[in-house]
Length: 209
Image (cartoon, rainbow, N blue to C red):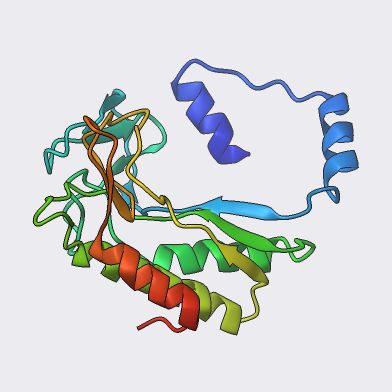
């Protein structure tokens, strides 16, 4: 609450807490069937008290994003961790940490599903397919992070990849592709990528290789 009040104070906001809000939260706290976690990336942040500035990298121009919010923090880019063209840090450990934070901080949780996880990229269509080894590697690493969390006691019951096929993005339009299947947006024809065959074999065997 100290952090929340600081953020509000430097940005001219205020906080009103009502008894009925807490009554609703108390009544609802045990009614959730599961917790869904959407995870794509992590970020390193440092303190920032300057003016807020956000530039969204919508076109995949690497290094083009700016994220700094007064009283909250500033995204740090000088960290030796790989990023995609949209400046998203590829950090599977972050998914493990997020799962285990739930386990440790909310021991009354019931079960966890990874409801979204995947790699957006500028897929290159060659010979009726996409050789997306980077996507395969991303999924493999994140599934291993989930496996490690299960080994360490987390009740993770499912993993849902984003996405089956290339789709429209609310913030990137058709610039960024996530699918296992390449979509020709002009003809709507679908083509399995290398990752589609890899994921099929994974689904059949249950073994991450």
